[in-house]
Length: 522
Image (cartoon, rainbow, N blue to C red; front, side, top):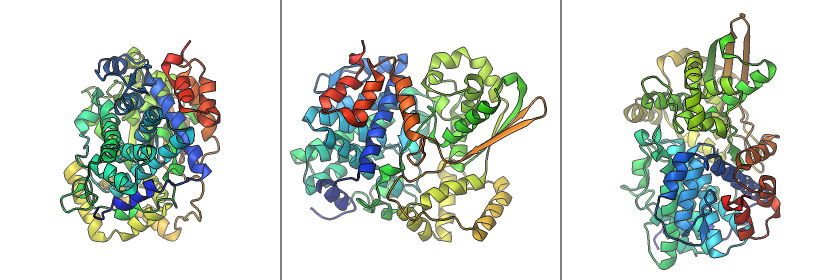
């Protein structure tokens, strides 16, 4: 087997790495979070009907939302569709890797008779490989959940770990998965329910790739860096250094769960709204204006969502609710929260008139200072610091040109210039600190600031930088427990017991699957 960028990754998977306890615990938390996301959408008519009408045959792996049993790749496909439906997942640095890492691992572990320890380790490995591929392509035509290709290698890596493939087979599993990489298109993602397939299709391919590798199929270990390979298509400027640090930096320790079923970049805005509401009840007729200062990523996602929304934006659909920050704010005003219940189409349509009225009062604008805080999070990762330091002025010029071509975007708009110069001057005078250690939880900052003007002339404002769902937050586990019980109580026989089995009590994978499956409901 000739060398290639995938070879060290395959060798690492085959070495049977032993993650530290902090990484293993994070994997259990991520498993619980994705099960909660899956059951939050399990009762939605559209996703339930879609998944029940796919002919897949029978097998040894369980679809948790229905209790049906299929072959591992097909079961993982269905579970990923359910967990994607409400946009209620989590992230690590860099990517929404949990869909494939969790559900490929769960399906294959059940089919192959793996132990709980092997299952949890596979979840870690899937995240580590997928996150690094996403990071290596950060400066490219796709971002966030649209990096659907991370699920190709995440699923392949997790499956290869559980199948105990050797180094050559592991490398080929990754290469086979990337032979025909998935490329998400915005019209299919912002609005229609085809978005449900964003993780499902590549996860299925990744699981199958590892089985193919075990059977003797080969791939191209240099498929990433070849002149006509992956990075040529998926990166404006490839960052190969992002693939390093396996076994040193545990990307899963950046885990951040969502407290609202919406884009991750919006989470702190929703939290800011709830903090304001805790001080002062919010009534739409007493509010004149809501102003949201946000980071560049959230600003761009909102812009894309509004381009694909109906003429009378926002798009009040199960998918549309996730990507328009103004709509999330409107929901927070009306309901006082944003959970799985408020993401259901029936709830959205029942409150359409009220939501549109509140939405008209919301202004969302980019603040470069908040974007710089996001950059600080990247600088906290050694590979991130190295990649940022290597970018030259010509690289930035080329990147700006590429973003304008692909996204009709500018890295900074004309109205940002004065504020950007102010931020850069402040940063030059007071450089951001670099964390001394990456041994424990690593925070990812996605700040938002919300300001509300009231009819009586008063104002309330709140800024939140670190999502409460971050592993680095002291309240993260409590929030996860509340989310799990709330979203699973109508579909599982005993949601608190199921959570305990995930976090520490389960002795076998079949015991765990039985507790997490809808078929266990009394």
